[in-house]
Length: 254
Image (cartoon, rainbow, N blue to C red; front, side):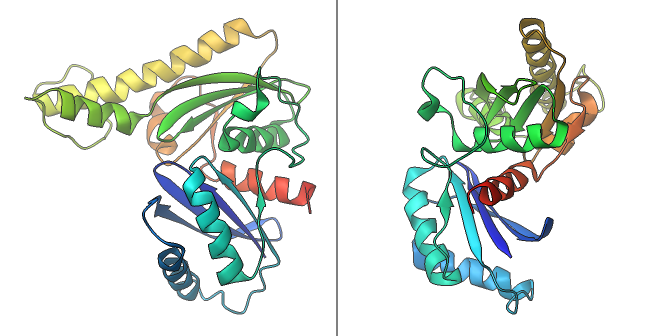
């Protein structure tokens, strides 16, 4: 089995691949204050609960946008699984040319998503990742990473509205029944949800107007499945796209 770890600003997602199948996956809160010992306890309990003690884990790979947690999880994987993980970054073979002004600036998760999406479609691709930030990444028909765009994520926008507008309450993020809200909660839900959907559709259309090739649009991230039903441009959702990309990169660097 292969362990894959995607460390994001809000959540850390851990997956175990048995061959090409994702045998198990978990989502933990990313806490820089948590020690390697604490993470070892959490992950050990998850492994025990999944009854995977008898499975041999032969390798691991991680991507991270939280540098303090990179070292923590390298230690966790070494101590808990007795593997030294590959780390997505400079020196790791991706098989994808990075046509960015400074390739080192591209977040590891954006490269991993792009590799997975291109491997899936084998054509020009736009990847929308709904995370702490919402990222848009573009891959050419030749499999080149061209760049993209970054905007605040849905949860950030919702929390900012609550904290900065004194009389507005914090509301559940949900698809409202109508766009024209009849009370404050409905109005906030409409503005946040449909406003975000419009942002996504608008950005995808603008990206398509700027590139000179047909593109497929795939979305990933924890809330992708909630938003996709209201968008007009997203063609496919894969919540495990990043984990699949990590597995691909592990095989390329085995």
